[in-house]
Image (cartoon, rainbow, N blue to C red; front, side, top):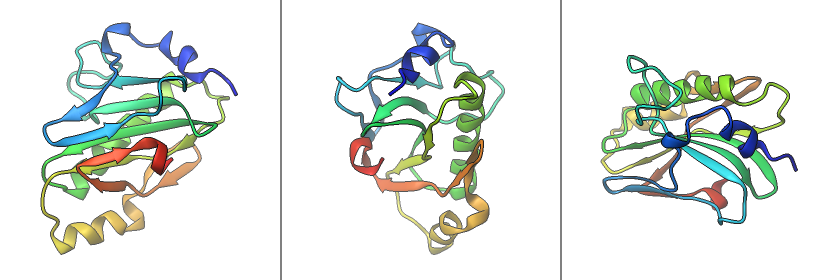
Length: 154
């Protein structure tokens, strides 16, 4: 297994790296510490995204369950497909810039929410036109209420 997280770590400011993914009542449980990964806080001033760009909350890059992963993460109160998909797509664009082109990675955009779904939003999240794209991969957003355990979903 390559050490993808160490390669990417060299391409981002250490100041925007974090050890937790949590906002208000939404949270992502990260893999065990013995798995190599980094988490970029995309809201940090030194994150690899400009101030005027749409952004996701976090970007997980590293190993989970014996595979290398790129996982843009959004934590939201009210789940709105159009906004969440745009934010996760922005995270995928940033990952495309900082992850080596030859790296063999799996991709999964995820969002945790703390709010009520309207029927139209459920349908929008399931619509194939709302897939998030990273290089040759295209995935629907994985949604979970309040808490996501990356080891269980990746």
